[in-house]
Length: 180
Image 1 (spheres, rainbow, N blue to C red):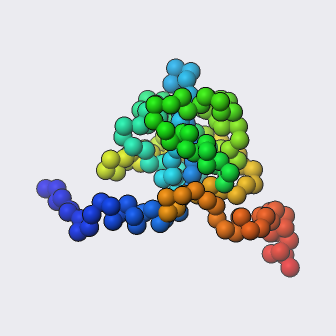
Image 2: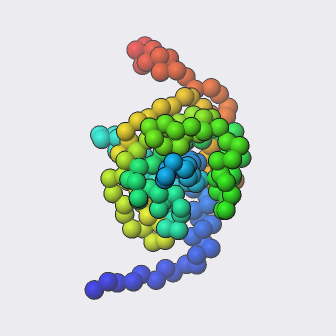
């Protein structure tokens, strides 16, 4: 017997609360019949280190989701703080999202040339989640270059203040600091 929980708050109250939770901004991509597909996603997270896995939540009506479930593969482009225009472009419905965008195929998936973070993933599982599907992916390839991340919170784009205020230390500097 399934018990249906009735929330004691309105949908808008939940939206307002979740708007205050900062989230990384990514563009999730897939391909079908040689054509690129992509959409802006802020419901992205690291899931596991051993093995390396991530999760993305996609609306059930998403064209990208249908391509991912058909092929069993997806890419994740992690955006930099200056790429809010790219995020907005890939969030629009009905537009050719790749028109005028620097991109290429990498590991058989659409990769945005200017995104500082890139993951190629194989679907390991899809989990029901209300009006979304939570896709768990095994990371088969990852690349990154240092850049302040683009985050979304309080219905606006920004970045983490520590990234905006000062440059990141290199791994060598961090190791040297620990050796002292």
